[in-house]
Length: 31
Image 1 (tube, rainbow, N blue to C red):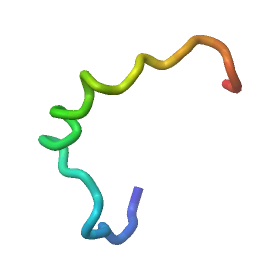
Image 2 (cartoon, rainbow, N blue to C red):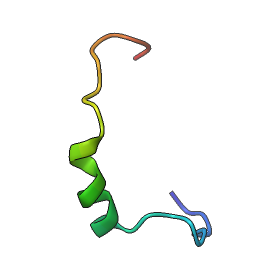
Image 3 (cartoon, rainbow, N blue to C red):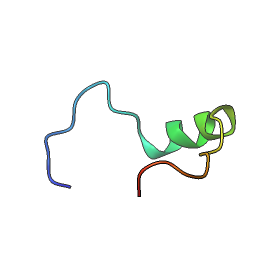
Image 4 (cartoon, helix red, strand yellow):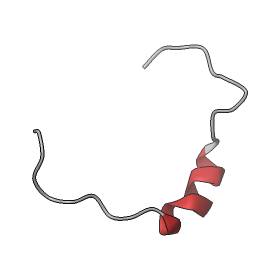
């Protein structure tokens, strides 16, 4: 993905902090 980064984009380290707080993806839905 090639796009300009926004100032509000999260860094990888920030995602690692948030990951445990996010619900697991549910099965089903569109492929």
